Amino acid sequence: MGTPEFAVPSLEILIAAGYPVVGVITATDKMGGRGGKTLLESAVKKCAVQHGIPVLQPKNLKDEGFLAELRALGAELQVVVAFRMLPVAVWDMPPLGTFNLHGSLLPKYRGAAPINWAVIRGEKETGCTTFFLRHEIDTGDILLQRRLPVGPEETAGDVHDRMMLAGAEVVLQTVQLIESGKYELQPQDAALATSAPKIHRDTCRIDWDQPVQRVHDFIRGLSPWPAAWTTLAGDQLKVIRGGVAAGEVDVVPGTLLTDNKTSLRVACHDGYLEVLELQLAGKRRMTTEAFLRGTELPPDLILGQ
Image (cartoon, rainbow, N blue to C red; front, side, top):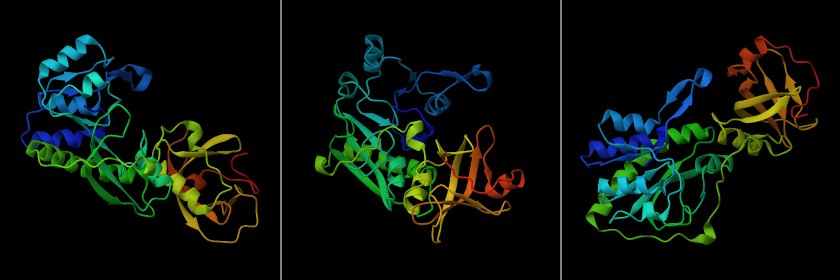
């Protein structure tokens, strides 16, 4: 059970290992693309079709027709990677249970955006966890965990791509562990739990009146998507990539300093954020140097006003 590209390596590694995947459950097709006229299939569906695996795309996971189809597949074990919350009737169906791959070291960062929030919070280490599902989201007993370092300049996208592959290996190891019957479950300590809620547009607005390292981590944690943003003369400006620049701050946080050639710095509470890649509303993403070649910025601009 899964939908985005993140889930594809987990499906492929199980197929390559010779496990009989009896079915794939994924999101319904959507209309999109230019003019909204293209039928868009999930990455997991495309993979399943290539391998000749039956695909179910229920709108309602509690629908009796879907439950009957799922039951007819006769799965002994269900594997969930980047899918939606399941009702008890689904996760309690197979005799060996249902386990989920989550992109954090549970119980830290329970929720919809664990990779983003780990980077936003400046974590130097994160990881992935497999656990048996129960009704409360991301609270089930842990099967396996793998730790992954987070580099000081890595973005959420960088960590996502590494975890996508590492997570697939953990999924395979978990299936093998369950198959052997020789495993010990580790209950989660609720006292150590932190949350990783869904990210909305307002979540992504940059507050320049913070320590520059915190601003840098915020930008990394939202890159490349949905991207941290501010405003430049009333227009939305996304900051895709930045760096920490030292220097004594004697201007208002958010003040833009530029040579109008190659450098664009923004004052923060205790230093400067060097903007390296950006995107102005209605424009493509570009380096700061490319942006400044076509834009002459007036002095004394303050971002976010």
